[in-house]
Image 1: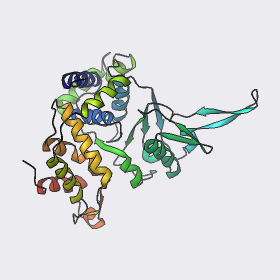
Image 2: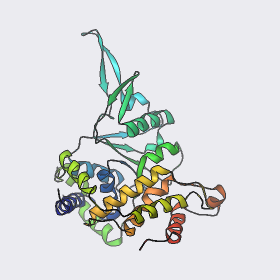
Image 3: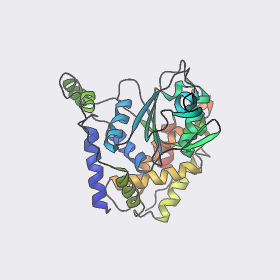
Length: 319
């Protein structure tokens, strides 16, 4: 697959998603970056912005087997992994697979599940395997998790551990629609072309098969990345470890994620080379959720996004 075919495939995928999702251009592109890199994403936003709808639409565009888990405080690991049940007719135990056995998983309100259940999901995300009664089961090589959480509600929630946050390649923030976008949504919601109705009727066709994804990922490997850009990405990440406002900075996995995401962003933009702008475009969604601010900085109202903006202005850009 050449770059023109890559660009055509991306345009088809974006067009399919836009049949349902109004606006949210950055969120759509970031979601495709995560899929191209075969990673996982954390979608954050207040209720009603379309977090769940974006994940379901993306799964439809990919033609992937899709399952959804609504995380709650009483959700147990066996509820998501599955369990062995004794079969009286066969006189043996049979595996009843849980919703983790899929290709595209939506983990809705992930921060409402207790740590024990979150750790079961972490194993699936990290190793693409599920352990049931000390026996490991291999998941799809394209197993992808899109998790959602509400940033303003903390009652009855369990903060995600740092190890699990680090497994999400990006934290994708859903923003308020513009006046024109909200007007379009209001108009469509009164007719047959309401976003949910379009998706339910199956009007979003699958345009990327697993073979297509493999070809797209191979094409990404041909995008040129100069040594100067490698150095730039490393310096940006290392700068998060020495900033006075940050208690714990981003680790080496963040450097890898930043470079892979920037390369995918360059491909989506139709270029066969990576530029500093690609790194800057994905730096905040890749790094923001990996940073732990100092308590005094949080009391002063400092946000991780603000610190990253400052770092991107301070680190010299290669010419």
